[in-house]
Image (tube, rainbow, N blue to C red; front, side, top):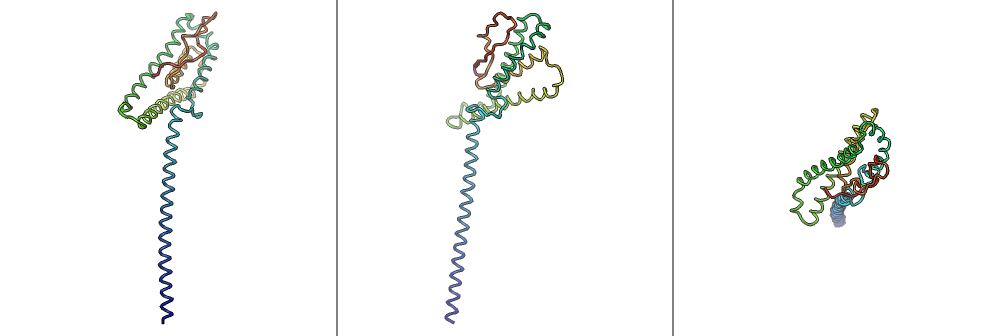
Length: 221
């Protein structure tokens, strides 16, 4: 009988030990799961912190069709296209001064239109002036991201129209002026805004040499 009780006590001890280690293992697993979730949350937060400055101009995202480098390339394409449009422009409107004004007006009108939109965006983010510290910096970054999204809307809206009308002949002065207006809007939303360097442009001997080769940074919108 004494031997029987010894065996039972050993079994009870083993059962308690097994229960103890199972509970300990369960706690460790739960703690490990919490650590994994905490690490994942940290990585997600850091990804957002890193992505926001990249999207808002501190670093160019090569996936964006409206980065400054691409805008300059599109202006270069427009500049190269002008000699092909010029003969038609001369036939449609022989007055070179009038054509020059039309082109410059398109760039100015687009910039003014984007300035209006920027004022509306600033109104939405008007609390920025009342916020200080890191939070204020984030508000500024999100405002810039909103502007970049506006750029993308403007970019893709014309791209969609172009895809629908690509069969049509766009070698007209009117279509060219429309492209000027569209690109001017995109450039006006850049940070900093861009515009053709009208002031430094010298037509030289060719009075129809209307387009400046270079862009310059404009005052912020």
